[in-house]
Image 1 (cartoon, one colour):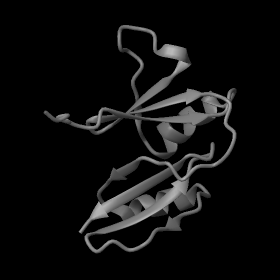
Image 2 (tube, rainbow, N blue to C red):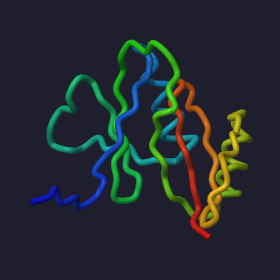
Image 3 (spheres, rainbow, N blue to C red):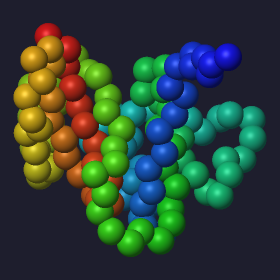
Amino acid sequence: MKIEFKRLDHVMLCIPVGTENEARKFYGEVLGLRELTDLGYVLPKGAMWFEIGDVQLHIRAESIQHYSERHPAFEITNIRNAQEILESHGITIKYESLIPDRIRFSFRDPFGNRIEFLEML
């Protein structure tokens, strides 16, 4: 017997309490994600849900203690364009170790969450 995984459903990131409007601006405007607001039910614990292809990004405010290397990695197309958009908003790009079949970099959102973007070659 084994666990049979179907797909990644969502990734949850945390933000400091009181920064919800800043999160909506960053994820909705800077990254261009669509916030899921008309689900027919209230989201738990004041969470925000955004759509990324067929995966959801869940954001919830909580007390954040320190930075972590934990992160979601999102495959995208036109990674250079994404880099330019992020840098135009003053976001620092960190180039990651080389992996032969992909181009990748990471960055921190305004709340310290690490996010990786990658493009398959």
